[in-house]
Length: 239
Image 1: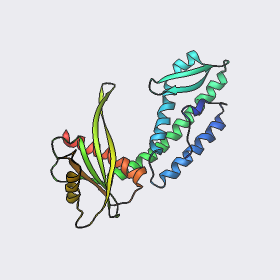
Image 2: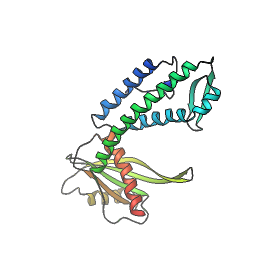
Image 3: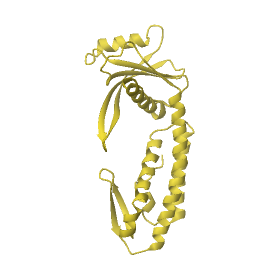
Image 4: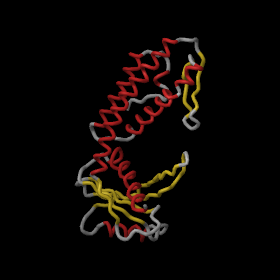
């Protein structure tokens, strides 16, 4: 997939038409993936670039004090803007503003398209516990079933809580365990029993099944949406 650098809009020759076609080529690749219901990493990538360019835009007051300078990079961890001085050029500043305004508008539209696909997939998921869920459910397994395929993908998960800007967030880490062919013998309960028997590190795990009647790309769409949906499900039931 065609990618953009962190500072694509202010690198090299700052020309509206040049940056326009750079952006359009990138978005064309994003939409191509979206038409195949492939969301990731495309959706998270464009959200990153959208937020990055908004950060630049919202620091316009600081830029006007220090500009003209050539934007050379972003330290994402510290959110510091780094610049390299060049000769004063009001016309270049106006060109950069036009590029940013154009990019934000198109990126908003593309993100909306991706969000609609995400919401459609999420709406088609059914999450249910397998057996009794223990009080400690921050670690366990989930079974993922994709459409009419007679396969059950088994993942181990671990939820963690971290704080950012005085707010609490939940994240999920997963690892693929095995793939089972579903039949009258290999039920969800049977798979759970086998996991407990063979994996002694979790003697009383929380286990959930996540099913959908439709078929979606597993790695690019179904798995990432299922993971986020499971976090919401566990968090909602714990509230």
